[in-house]
Amino acid sequence: EQKHAMKELELVEANSLTFYLREHQIMSGIGAKSNKDERLLELAEESPKLAIFARYTAQIDAYKCLFPEAVIIDGRTPDKGAMAEQVETMDEGVVLIQSDSAEGYELPSVHTAVFASMSYSYLSYVQSMGRFIRINKENKPKRFFYLLTRGTIDEEVYKNIIKKQDFDIALFAKKSIL
Image (cartoon, rainbow, N blue to C red):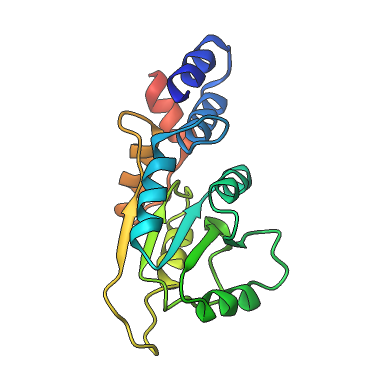
């Protein structure tokens, strides 16, 4: 379905900024079944508690269909701290977190986190990682997974974030058309 969605996107005349934003949404799994869904189900099966980070609200909503019992922490969550406390009391489960809503609470009992799509902001990435690695808590080994689609904007966002830089979609689009 992603390949079909990308072919349709290539047929639409759009400026490069719009094109790459839409490509990022498609590669995130919004509006198309993706291999990311299968990998998330596998990781949920093998991890007692799993945190899934997603950039888009629509992606959070789609993952809620995959994990109906999941706890959600996103921009619509009025008390993120209370939701985090709920996750901390669970023996197992999935928490869906919007990347730009990852501050002001702790989730040290979660040992596996997946970045299903990454924010363009390095600060959001650091805040996301910080939910699990706490100085004042007992820290057991953590596992972090990055679900990327090869040859797409996914890889470019990841490369910038790992280099501790924000991803500038306007600069990326300009380089791509030159």
